[in-house]
Length: 367
Image 1 (tube, rainbow, N blue to C red):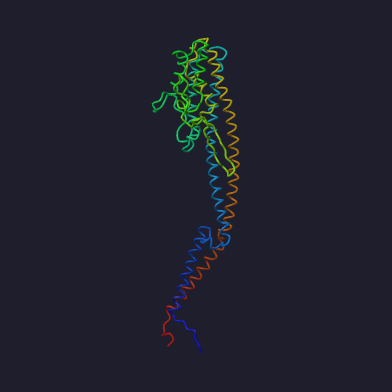
Image 2: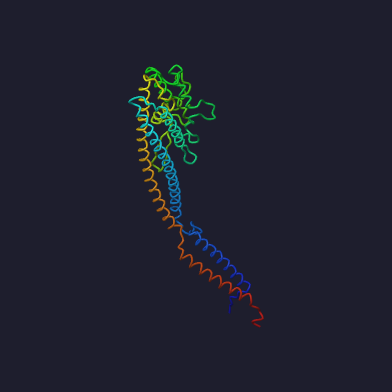
């Protein structure tokens, strides 16, 4: 007769090995309950691993687009708010200046003070930023686009001084024009000052500074050689690129700023009666024209912002769907995992009890 005998030492070691395995499974089960994901996803889902990886990659890309659209919306919102405030301030100044179109107003000095206040406000708004990016600087996002009206620490002439020097260069040295001919010369000189040109081209004599470089330090309208400079653009989706917003050197802004500077640089109440009509009319026309174009740009920005909002909702919806699909592959049923934990705990207790009983066995028990 054959006997399959197993020593108590062998039985003890086998039970110890079993308990170690059960404890490892318990740790794994507890981890799955805590994370909600299989401890070894690839081993669990097998052939579906490739699909899971593809879903993960798509989820990550979609998440990046969600962040991009949120960033774009934040920048557009700040930009829209600044442009709306510029329009409001400019409209108030336009109304005040328009009262002087019929005849010269004795309150021209107060108009100059008001224009200076609006000028400081507009320059401040054009230096608005979102995060670390200046919104109206073009692609030169790291620095404010507009120089302070009274100058800065750069050592360059202050913008207001540049404008006043341009006026005096057209009048022969006086602070303001005295005749209609001098007014025409001043307007032509200021148009040259506020125009943009190839950065490699010097300013037209007798000007030594122009709008770009003297008043504005962001991305130039054109690059050296004459090619248009790239605009700021966002990519809120794979197949969608939006060149959005306004630069402080766009035509409407330069036109608006020229009109404001014309009113802020001189006291029109002291201007010669022959020089006054064309000067105030031109300033009002510049203000009106710039504001009209700025309203159109604000409306366009609103359309672009709505496009971004639509794409953002699409990305968020897709992200939710992808999350569910990934969870279906990687996720652990909490009830099933809890049941498995209870079973493993019971098995470990039983194994521990069996090990303890074997440890108490002695040969003398059978003699």
